[in-house]
Amino acid sequence: MLYAILCYHDEDTVGSWSKDHEDAVMAKLAVVQEKFATQGRLGPVARLLPTTAATTLRKDGDPPLVIDGPYAETKEQLLGFYIIEATGLDDALEAARDLGRANPGGSYEIRPVGLFRPGSIAT
Amino acid sequence: MTDLAWIDAALTSARPQALGALLRYFRDLDTAEEAYQNACLRALKTWPQNGPPRDAAAWLILVGRNSGIDDARRRNKQQALPPDEVISDTDDAESALAERLDGSHYRDDILRLLFVCCHPDLPATQQIALALRIVSGLTVKQIARAFLVSEAAMEQRITRAKAAVAKAGVPFETPGAVERSERLAAVAAMIYLIFNEGYSASGEAIAQRAPLCEEAIRLARLLLRLFQSEPEIMGLTSLLLLQHARAAARYDADGAIILLDDQDRALWNRKMIAEGMALIDKAMRHRQRGPYQVQAAIAALHAGAARPEDTDWAQIDLLYQTLEKLQPSPVVTLNRAVAVSKVRGPQAALELIEPLASRLGGYFNFHGVRGALLMQLGRAGEARAAFDQAIALANTTAEAAHIRMHIDRLMAESAPKPGARAAT
Image 1 (cartoon, rainbow over the protein chains, first blue to last red):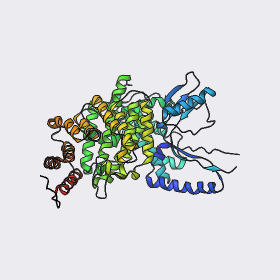
Image 2 (cartoon, rainbow over the protein chains, first blue to last red):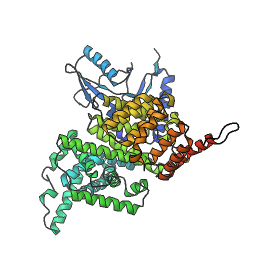
Image 3 (tube, rainbow over the protein chains, first blue to last red):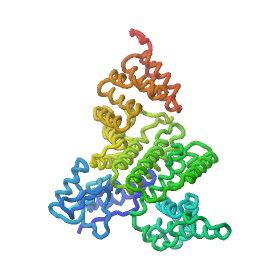
Image 4 (tube, rainbow over the protein chains, first blue to last red):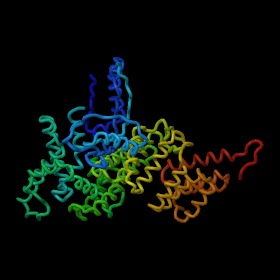
């Protein structure tokens, strides 16, 4: 069984970490990630840019509505995610619209990825 | 993190919202600050025992408000009743908590808090000092250090600024759309000023002033979270991030400025660049250009070039032309001249800036750029004269040292070489 581990924290707090603190945390995390990687059970790892960089595509209407900012509703739940390569926000939104046509309803939050490691899972 | 460090972080991040709401209730900066201070003292006492409240800002607002009302009652016993407007809406303390939890209401509170700091009567330095004290909650000592003045002088500056704000009166009505956008523009300009105070530091002041850049970015992000669809606020945040991303590469060991072309690009902060790029990309979708967006777009072109020679100078020239239209200023034209010199050569750039002499004659960088262009054209004597003028007008030792470097290069190049004719 694959599991996703979703990371939540106060971005103000994390954003105000000093470089030393940030480096120390990342180094400690790298040790744990390395352990999982050698066990062949680490999939992709992504660190997202702050929510100020987010855009939301509401696909409960036609055409879907583009809204600046992160997904802010609390009545819906996070059900899944994609990582895609795109030339920019317009391109990423186009991909999201494509997916939305296949599955209307709900929303996609489009957030640039700041750090990405593809990982590999032994099958 | 220790308990106290956690509380400190929570208080810092809740401060603008809590103080902004208290300012709306009490309509007086001193009263609001006192109430906020009391709430913080209570937090320091009770949070370690009871654990953090779910919503720190709401907790501080409620406690601060009650303490402010208590104080006012206590004073009332000794003095005549204050006019009603000193304490407004005192009968809905319960509903206030519920209201605070709804994020859409507090953005005008925070905007107001920022806006009272940028009163047009206040000189820029006082606006910045006031904002750092009131909104960011830096101590007078910290601010004095960043501005390289004594604590007493800074205390006086802030007191004077507060008196001016009190005299002008706090604009506590909920702003209309036009007013809101005017306030937003004033606040954005002030955040940019804070950033520039840090960015323009040199020599020994760099370490002391760098936190101003970080504080400006924090405030810009705060503003952007409140006004998520404002392309100029995206542009401002992007601009600050892209500029600050170069911080580690901008100075040599002695604190002298290293020019963009000579910077070690491996030292640029990639994470900040990625965020800045994402924000300008997002802003451009709105097709409402503005000065911050254009400047961010220029910074993004620099940030995106792996080597100096990869820089898209033609595009930068076009963006500066746009900026000249949006915000006509001889300094913008001067900056554009650098791009023009790369695209069309030093002669074209020189022709562009010569007409600015009457307006920029007192600006060190005008003579610096002019000297560099003359140098490229091989007019060494005139270049030397321009550099001398630049040094005479330089504001900081780093600026002067930077120009002197050009002169040294010029001297080295024009020094008589074996078999070569000395340039005159």
